[in-house]
Image (cartoon, one colour):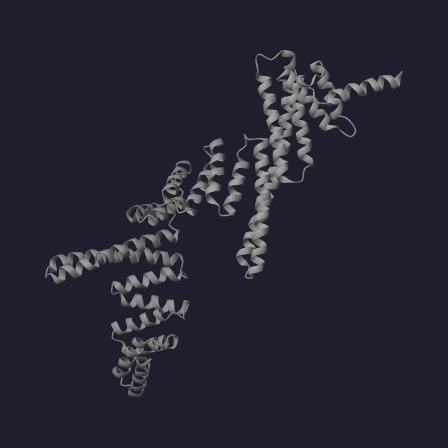
Length: 459
């Protein structure tokens, strides 16, 4: 008798496991029978997930929206996904899991569905929330770990010198980034209401220098939390990397609306305007930067360059008025040029004080001081440059030229000799040096310099 009962149960389950569509002439069973049989298959040892899915598919085909049916299907796909190692396939399974859970929610909200079928919706909803939270956290954390690894690989690539090693590290970085992207996509699929997974994908693309793709995902994150300042800031930086200065300015200004009086952001806006060659606007934002944080040396550098360029732009006008005999206008413009140079010197001196070993800043300051005929300060600046970069012949020439301007001709010899050591083939250097030797009554050296000039001119 017991054997007969077990055989009957087996035959029922076997019948239910087969495709049960009306076109195939199978008997339609009560909805509850499909559910019970599917649960038996799921709870089997080992679980018979394929059988359970066939039963649930058949039930949903015959009876339409059944919240528990979608719930169980989602759980089966979650089990499949949990055991899958291929991240691409895992993502596909989680998409199917989430789709079934979403269908469950829709069914539970269906006012036309019988109340008896919706009686456990709250319970199912709580379980689904827990499942989503579990898999979101698990995959999001895995994604974050890959970003850390990508950052480390990027540092190793930048410090590596061997081309084979660089290629190997780049491949590792790409593979790691691909894995991270899948982890974050899974997290976003499991719970699309959380913005951090979208942000994570954006950061992955940012590390790969694929800024257009990075922006797409950062914007998706920002759409969920539109008032999140650092997302807006990251988007602004992405636009900078793409040389899209217009949009970078828009997003930096938007960030300023959220974080007012941020000096670094003001300076970034100044840089964007400078790259657009809108120098008046750039200078205005440099001034704002300095007012907010007087220690940002770059703002002083930009402001110094702004006035230096303005002084250069009117230099030709002075010559034009002088050639025309209009000394009044020439003097007026000369005064304006000197004002620009003085302003440039002020900002560059401040920048140099903040960054005393910055060669570019000191060089610009030295040039401005020389142009303003402030020869003593210019001399000290160029001497400092010869200490910082002793192999730049231009600095030694400038030191010699200033001594000549000061009529200290004997002092000009040593820096010009150093310049010829660095570039012995420069005829003009030997010509100046010859004249210096003659001026200082050094006939033998002048003769040697003349011979060198003749030798170079024959080449």
